[in-house]
Picture 1 (cartoon, helix red, strand yellow):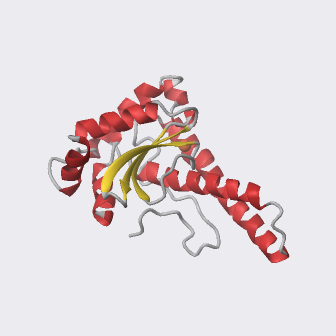
Picture 2 (tube, helix red, strand yellow):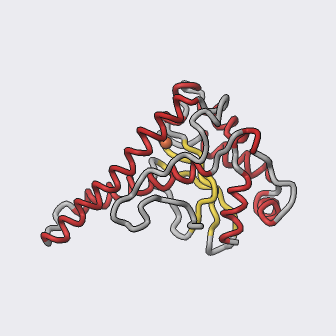
Length: 210
Ligand SMILES: [Fe+2]
């Protein structure tokens, strides 16, 4: 299984992955209408933007014209990160009935080593997500130089990243992820995310890098 599925693995064109559950599967913590808009419109928009940017880059390459390269590199990172982070977001969630915190295993041991406890990891990721300036993400990563779990923020989609981390779990802090149901109460949305965290998927990703 790939690290996470970006769609269009032949690289001809990226595609929007289907949700791994029904649109209403994350109720009551994330409402069906938000999931529909978020997946079908916003996530699709990043996939479309990524494809359009790659097309323009290819056209410039063929013409030997790199005059637009600065703007295109920005678009590439923005839409590429937007597409990838949303895949991670949907994969990292599941219905409440399936969200079970690990009671043992390698991931839990690592979380205890790097954060003291799973509760402390959740508290730090929640706090980082709530405190994102403007639109962005909270990201649980595997940092490859120090071999450790690390919480990071990403502003927009692509800023504040450390090269050499593997994201394990992300929390979308863009208003489109929560505004219909929670309005400006971002903190309440973030706290409720833990009711639908797909720990089995987090452990699978951790096992693949550890
Ligand atoms: Fe989003």
